[in-house]
Image 1: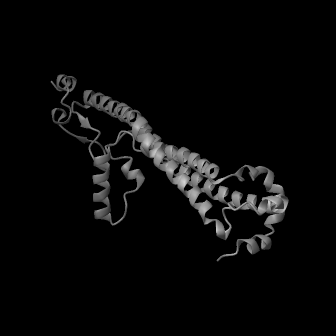
Image 2: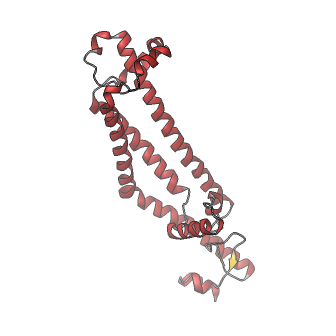
Image 3: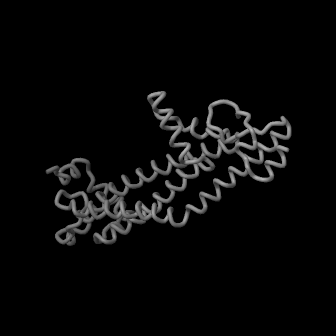
Length: 236
């Protein structure tokens, strides 16, 4: 198997461990502690990524967005860019800008989570060598150094904790955040409908800002899409 001991000595990791060890010594713990730490990481970044991923399409119908993305991929032989999906309902400059900001947050959250995960793996490796060099009396009993060839079981505990954290984040989002997302969708749609009614007062025709297209809003019959009593009164 791959000899991490010889590689660590080649890269002078024992010397680095003397400097880094005080910052990462908290990683010296049993399997349950490591699994719990990675569970918290998975829970936090899972919730953050789900929140940003959902808010970047706030106000858009998931079904319509998926159907349009499928048609775009079929017609153009490539996935639909986010800029196209964010403009499906011609939401206006402010809503479109907000969706782009959430899209950047979505990708930054994922990148930050991966960077933190990689940094923790390196930190555990450094910590194991810090224990080896600075506390050799414990090394004989420290059978849970994660990056030693004989300790793949420890890696499985960390990966399991991370996976459980991500699954738990999705469950919490489903139970607790769906109402918030639905309210955000309604707020955006109410704003778009209000702008549509204002436009109809100026031009004498109703504009359906939710229509799927690339260009400017397409004039439609208000009675066909807006069946509320208020819309009927305004159309009359």
